[in-house]
Length: 342
Image (cartoon, rainbow, N blue to C red; front, side, top):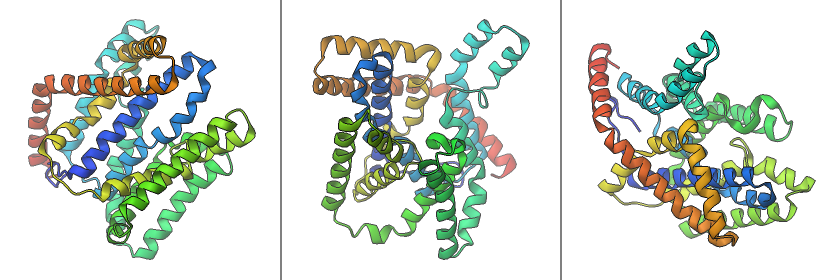
C-alpha cells in the first residue's frame, strides 16, 4: 500500500491479515517439508488446503489498495531481494562449473528461487497500466476483464488441465487476483453488510469440508478432484477461501502502530524463511525433530504452529538488525524519486 511518494499507508486490520497470511505460509512450508521427507504421513496434506490461501490474500490486498509503484519502492524491493539472496549467490558461484553458471548466479531476479518475487515484480511493473485501465473503464468492462482473466487462469487450469497455468504461479493469475481485489474494494459497502458471524461460519465450514473430505479420499480420484479444485493458487475453492478470509478481516476496525510496524516486515519473513541454500535444510531438520517428540498429529501441528511463530519473530529480528541497509536504500530511493519524479 504505497503512497505517491513511496510512503506506505497501513490499515491495521489488513496488516493483521498479512501477518496471518505469512503465518499460514510458514506453517504450510513446515508441513510440506515434513510430508516430503516422510511420505508415510501424506494424510497431513489435508491441512495444506486451508493454509494455502496466504499468497492469494497478499495479491488481493495489493489489488484492494492498488499498487502505486515508484522508483523508491522498486529500489527497496530489489535491495531486499539482493541482500537476502547474497548467501545463495555466493554458494552458486562457488559451485559453478562454467562461466554461464557464474553469470546466472548474479541474475538474482530472473534466476531466483523466490517464484513469488518474479511474478509479483511483473505485476508491480504492470500495475500503472492496469490501474489506468481500471480508472477509465466502466463497471461492465471491469467485469468483462475480470471474467476473461479468471477464465484463462482458473478455468483452463481447473477444468482443462492446461499445464501453461499449472499452480497459478504466473502473471495472468496475479492479474486476475489483483482485479478481484479491486472489485472487492469497489463493492466494499455491499459485502460489509454481510454479518461477520456468517462469514466466519462459511469460512470454518468450507475448510472443515475440504480437510475432512480430502483426508478421507486422499488416494482416490475424488481426492484428486478435490485437490485440483482447492489447492493451486488459481483453483476456484482456494480463491473463494481467500476471499472469505479477506472479508472477515475487512470487517475489523482498529488501529495499532505496533502491529503496523511488525507487519511491515512480512516480506522479509518470506525472503529469509524461504532462503533455500541456508535456511530450508535447517528448518526441515527442526520439523523432523519436533515430530520425534510429539507424534500425535494434533499436538505436532500445534507445536509446529509455535515454531512458525518463533521463525517469524527471528526473521523480523534479522530484518530489524539490517535497518541501516534499508535506510540507505530509502535514501537512494528518495534521491531517485526526486530526480525522476516517480
